[in-house]
Amino acid sequence: MKFFNTVFNFALNPALEINKIMQERRLGLALLGYLAGALSLMMMLALEDGGATSEAFTAGAAGFLFFNLCAGFFFASSAHLFLEITTGKGRAAGLFVLIGLSEFTKTLLVAFALCSAAVPQLAALRALVVIAVLILQLFVILFMMHHAYGLSKTGTFFALAASLIPSIVSLFTLGVLFIGFIFWLIFR
Image (cartoon, rainbow, N blue to C red; front, side):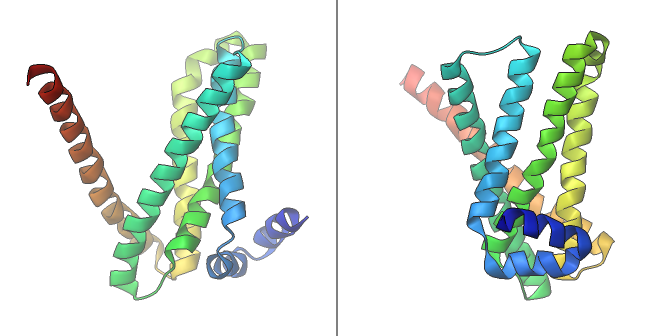
């Protein structure tokens, strides 16, 4: 029931509820969002492929959940560091919760998969719909960060973009090191 009260209060007064979420650090709510995002991705894939075994569905959902949690944690930490340096305020755990809440936007992918199952011609729009949902998720994150940190909309966008740079560089470096490690294992 507390979840529905949070959603209702968020619709009535988003700024107050976002700040309340940032202060209370509701990690259960964040995990529910990350789980909803992972299950939505797996449901979309299973619906498009004509189904999946229970083992494949569970393994895929667990993999997406692990990836979403790692990406959310990594992004929240880098964004929090940058925002704390620039604004002098913020909570990393609260930002992790807000990113988890933004994962609920991925439930739209399940609706698209159901529609494309009913009307197969819609399957050609899959890439556009996935990109649109990811952009919507980005806007939800920007909206919540704007209210949480009190920055202007353009300031919030540039803070988010600047906090993504260390994430992208770190992931690229990790990928290069992993490939180098594989080559080292093969050719040593």
